[in-house]
Length: 142
Image 1 (tube, rainbow, N blue to C red):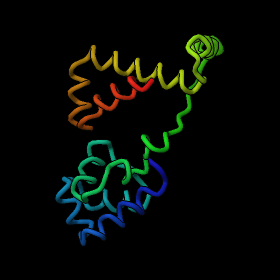
Image 2: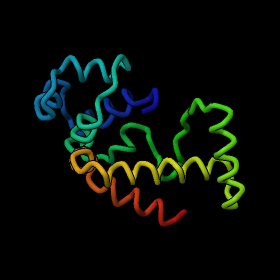
Image 3: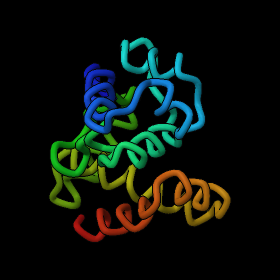
Image 4: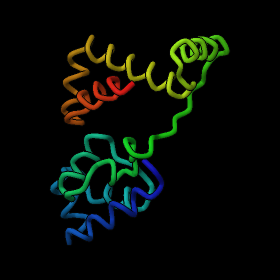
C-alpha cells in the first residue's frame, strides 16, 4: 500500500457521496479509523481493505495502490551469501534472471505451503477471492 492510499480512499468515498461515518458503519469499523486512513496515519488490514473496495465499488489493488499485475511490487529480502549463491545457481540453470528466479521460488513455495495447509488456503480465499487461482496462473506463465 503506497503513501497515497488516504487520498484515494477519500476520493472514492466522496465519489459515492458518503460521509466517513456512513462508510465506517457499512464497513463495520469506527469513523475515526476512516479518518486515520484518509489522513495517512494508518492503513487497513487486508480484510478491511477488501470491504472498503467492495462498498466503494472500486478494485482493491487500485484503492491500495498495489498494481501488482501491471507494475509489480518491490520487496526487500535479506539473504545470506549462501542463499544468494543458491538462487544464482538456480537462475543460471534455468535461464532466468535473478529476479525471475526469486519470483518463481516464492510463488512455488507459497503454492506448496497453501496446499499443505487447508485452513490457510481457506482464509486466503475468504480474504482475497480468486487469489489461489491467480497464483497458479502465475506459476504456469513461469
